[in-house]
Length: 280
Image 1 (cartoon, rainbow, N blue to C red):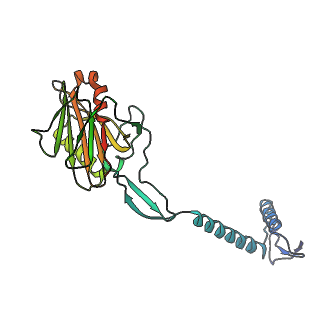
Image 2 (tube, helix red, strand yellow):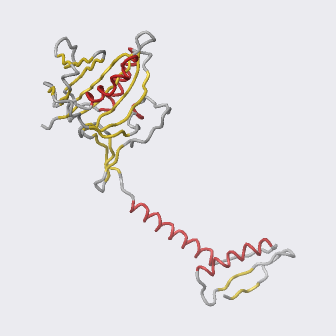
């Protein structure tokens, strides 16, 4: 590179104007070096004028930035819509044939305050997988839906009478009462659970939710909720499973006085885990 020093009219004592003459042409790296030198000279009290290489550097920068952004946008997948699974879970659909849950379940530690809004309903911890107990040798089949419940007839007494619709059947064991609500309706599971919780809180202001999580019971994805309600004289603890088929719902709740419920908890979960969605 050839540097020429030319007078630039009226200049101060410490001000010189330089013009770079490419002879031979320099590379981009060399141009960057010259730009770096410009900063050093400016700090020394001189003014430098580049007439050509700054433009080359800016053009190359814009070209590289355009290529980089094009590469990023090409590698990203685009959302094409939303859908609801047969389990009632909301999902995003993408143009490459993949999908993901709108709200992924995340672990919740003990003592965490869990919001009761519909938006946060599906942001719950994922529990374990459960199968029906070998002690549950008798089965109840729903007349409204494809759900069934396997139970231990030596412990639980089934009652098909005096049930207030939409409760289809109830089971009794000592002080434990299980009610099973079934309906044939196609509804968003998130909205259904949220409205059920809201209704119960309105009717029982003392309701306290102790645990919520997703479980897999006999291959069916269910929403589990453990909660308490009542005053000091009649405090109840309840365990609820929410399940959904393609166009059918089931809500299975076992309730008992807090004073005795822990003695029966193992048998309560045996009954709850007898819930099955029969193949059509």
